[in-house]
Length: 385
Image (cartoon, rainbow, N blue to C red; front, side, top):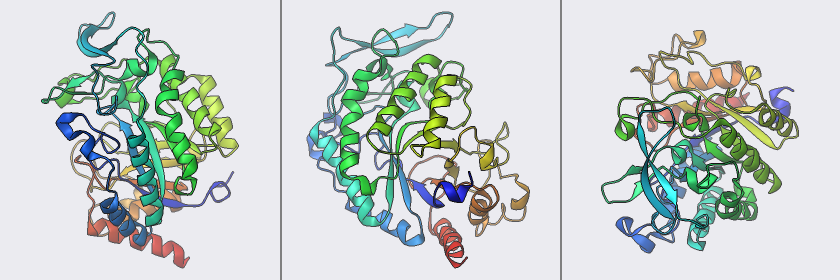
């Protein structure tokens, strides 16, 4: 199926958070408690309106993120305690949540859902459509204790239960279904609903990642079995589709070896019916992803480029793009991003791409007037054609 027959070409931005992980609902007391809600989204609306004026049409943002405010507003004490664990045949210990017997899955309070609805309305008012992302891979990594005594990450047992099985239904009942109900009510503001960002980093046998600040110089521990994450994706995508929304999963690698063949087959079938949108994320490094593969190379189409860097190349984890058509522009701060977008959409045939990012502190992100001007030129030239 040709790209133009599948969906309209669109360009968007990742605005993953305002304050990472606690943009919605009441916060624990060290972060301001109930006073933080209801959220005033007017500054975000004004920011998004500028992006819409430049030609962007989509915005992707995190909801639960790495779990720093889940359970919402209360911390973990009512549900369990953090303990040291060691996986079989592994030397390293990690901090994990031990659920209290009979503990339910934490619900999302009304204030959380009201803030979520408020953001969707701000997105629509600005002239964009939203791609909310329920969780990110950090949600399933070992817990990290913060200086104020609260913790982030380490929420895997709230998904899979203390038995670490594949029954994800109670978590989705508590944390996904209420959001889907809001998204249905604000459907004109929603493009698609993402289940999880880059799940492979948390899966045993997935690609390795080093997070020095959280876990030191060794690769981050991977705690989720392939069968567990496959079940999470299978049921979660099914629930999103069942709500009448377009589902997506933020795969960094569009063909993960750990994903079960039956789930991959189901995603392909849903994509063929227009109910699922696949993803790949593209960050050229010295170790791989040197060039942008064509859209047709994805194991599932349509596929969007859900993340690509806005920073110029430089450094080991963000090298200059090596695609042949970009040789004359990768050193030019006034043209490099526009040229990347032309490559992605005009030569590699991706229907959708999302820039990384409007807010984040990493080395792959540069976002200012120079980048917005290149976006404006790219979108304007397509309208002229």
